[in-house]
Length: 490
Ligand code: NDP
Image 1 (cartoon, rainbow, N blue to C red):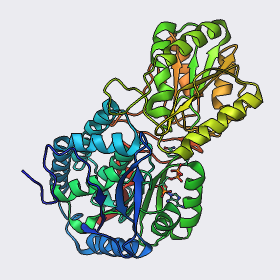
Image 2: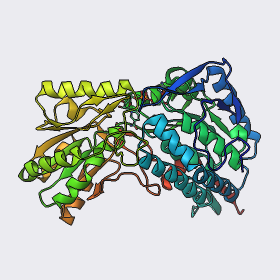
Image 3: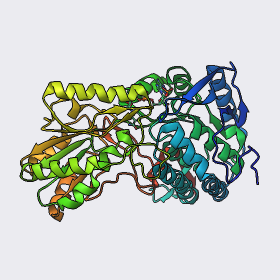
């Protein structure tokens, strides 16, 4: 069966052109301008996309405000909103292959990863469908005679700005809780990867979210994005991307006092102690930095390894890294696809030059190949935590390995970063696992596990890695306001 917006369950061929969605309406945009999306694996044009203008931002916000003030979505009871989100999840599962293809061809993700992302996007909607009627307030015992109620209300129009590294997943982390709480959404995808966000917008409409509550506006961050986040009609901004962009958004939107969540950069540490199961650590740590070709805010790009096992770890890590399969993202055997753009690849190549100048030893990788923007995963040994490659977010397939002597030095090095997003501790000692996870200032940390993000658990950063939390029930409070109501019994 074909959906109202034209997609059937078995379609996996990406459209050659996509329009914007302004208040649920598919349109070429106020100016009629388009831009080209390029396929990272080939460097060839993939699709044209209508480009939003400031006028489209205005139309989307006008409709979203009207929907919030007079429309049906926030007045729909939470259980029924949850039912609509369950339909979104079901449609995402039906169209999983289409979404997987959008991430493979539009972002360069290996097909296996992309299928997991499409399935997880549905998981996210299922989770927040269930959360919709479980996020409630309190009855508070106050001194006055009566009943005091702290109730949760939807926050208002949500401006959701997402990056190119996980275009679909990160959009769902924002869109699903925002809608679950009864808010209209205006989604701004990254210019490099707008396709899956536009397809997601179609799914929301097909599932029955009111059109005025759904806008998807691809266009340049510096014009369309900035106009959106600086508009006083926006009650809530949720942004994922570079720390400098997050700081700019915070400063520029400040006069409106919007609610702001920021998920920003990272330089996360993977700490390997000499009491760890070294074999297991070596087998799973390469993908903790190189997955998604290193374009991951949670990438463990600093390996802190205890001196007594340093040589063994480095040898095993290089061997395991050399076995990672880099190649065509459509090939099921591929583990690492291309980087998203030639510009992003150049950033990594520049950092490899900087590392050489600073005296780090490159043990493997760092070779660019084509067509497209491939870069083999690079391992740098004998890195000092003061070097730029150890301090700055590279956002590419570059791992730095740094030796340490004892537990206190490991904690000191892990914390010697302006960032605090993710991390792992490899140890066989439970006491040490507890001491180190408590001492490292980071929003997410795993013990003997390479993963960071779980749909049901809060995710976000300390320090310059961000503000607020996504996922889990923690996300719901960021899309609601608390109102206190007192009912006197006198
Ligand atoms: P940005 O932070 O510039 O972009 C992220 C999103 O914000 C995009 O949708 C972008 O639009 C938009 N944007 C940019 N400027 C503004 C603005 N002033 N107001 C509102 N929205 C804006 O990241 P980049 O894509 O340029 O990547 C640069 C670097 O950022 C990477 O090399 C990496 O280090 C880091 N990064 C970190 C991520 C993370 O998850 N921590 C994710 C992605 C990148 P547009 O695409 O049109 O520019």
